[in-house]
Length: 460
Image (tube, rainbow, N blue to C red):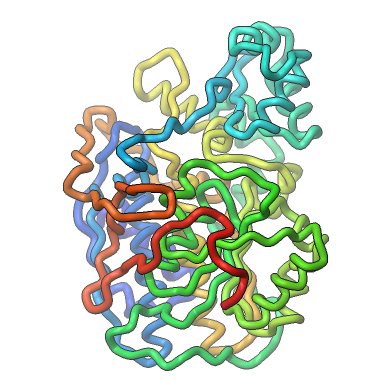
């Protein structure tokens, strides 16, 4: 009998326009529940990881080598998506003390305060002084706000907070309707051109060897996508701004990548990126919608400058609807879309409950990798430039559509130790998970250690 994950993988694959016969090479073992949740979070992890690996292998097949088997165990996949890692024996604290749910005059609001400018902006909006205010002060101030009013005020100020909603309340919003009307991801041809020349691929080469990827993302989903592409052989260059902060997870998510600094607010930085684009095959970006286009690096602009490029865009709430330009993070999207409310009710608790991992980020990351490879397959067969669009909210809608898991809260999470490895990095001794997708002929691997931003020069 098909599992939730195997059914999801088949639908993902066919919706991306990939050949059905390749699905015979996927081997998925295990089933939900793995972690304590009423949602099929482990199946979402397994299906998205399998899709990313199988699509990369299909690029290899298009380049002339035989297909190979891709095996993914559900427990390993779920653990890989749990975002656990340590550096020099220390596990970083994932949340700022001000992050989390707060009561409002008529409901609840979730703040995401991991970055100082988001934390400070929210506190100033509440009439509090950053550096002096406590979480209790923030809670007291929020009691005078309605949840949606504070959510709206934060959005207008470029900050990040979302009101807690039920599924029915989310569905009744204009943004909920916009997300529901869209597919999980879109892969659209946006320009003409011949198939880009890729280096010859040997039978023992990883399937994306010779594919140059520029990754302009931060936080989690985008870096997870770039990390997956690197595991399958792509030459991934992570491009960070020297002016923007990062989170501790960069020590894990930048495995296998070169890491450079480019300031797009300066002419020299734009010139550097333009030179890199001239030889790139894939461009992945997670900037706020319209931000890169204003700097000359939007999808249509790059399709003209580099005919044949595969351009991947990541957003929080998708390209349509009144929230299309809003910033957002996994925890906020969970809250806005109804997952926290539904999970709390299913657990028998009176309080909302977060999903056991940041699965919207993680699955979106692997869908980025899958979409990039699917578009590469079409580019190699048909030519043209391609635009892939992925969002956390669309991934959330997909997760909800996978259904609920009976007895999910009775699960005993598996131990992480059998799946861990310890490697050297530019951040210290990194202990983290091996990749859960097992490729039968050309094993996935990260051949470069993770390094701090700016460690490499901006050149191929």
